[in-house]
Length: 311
Figure 1 (cartoon, rainbow, N blue to C red):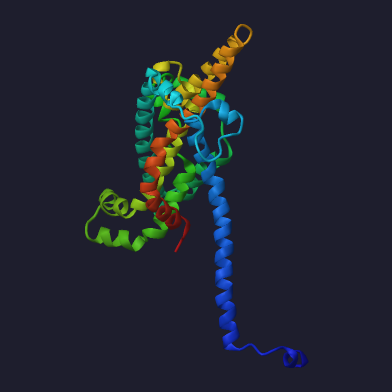
Figure 2 (spheres, one colour):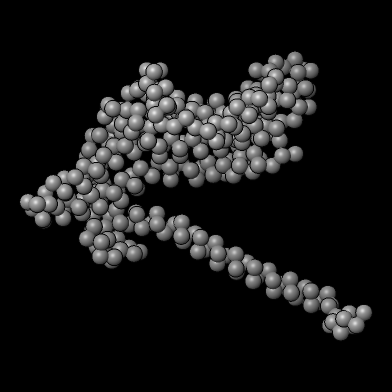
């Protein structure tokens, strides 16, 4: 009772003042944190872009911070005049398109089937799929399986081994369970719709955010992937763009090392070219994704939130 008498009274006017003061302080704090986070994410990308058009010696000396120094397009000219780059670009577009279409079809259909409560053995199938998230056979068994299936040095080696991502199946299942209640399916069945008709005419149109989310995930995954090509492909004509760029960088470094004992100037020139190619290759390989992702970001956000909320 004594404490209550000694505490200064809180008037509605004082409460409103604190609220008006708290919101600007919170907004300023949040904007400051977000500003630093944005700079930490954006600046490395910006630096790679300006370094790709700057003189490599200036980059080494730390003179490149905000603007290109010693503007040059030699790195891009070297890449664009290489026939293997264009062939790798075509292969990457082919692999990415086919693998994304197949993966999205399998993930969406599997997620829908597992969301059906009347599926026999639903829990067992889900358990067997989830087990693969924690226990993997490894590279060598996977390589032997791909080889026994006759997929080495084929387009199928770039599409089939990673066609089904179990974690994405779990996301799709949660999405269908939360957005397609059994009452909708029962009403459609009473109107004479079969399971296939319900899936293609009702479930798929209502799952556009999920499909967009899966398209973005698999596009980025397949476009940036080069490890499968490194172990499954021996024919250079089948190499994707990422592997072609990697080989160009490795060859540039090796050419500089081979001249080290004979001509130091040639070695330094090769090292500068390799450094310039490194930044140019990163920009060249990232441009397609940077142009595409902003158009799908809205669907990406919707699909992620709907798949994460149940009931």
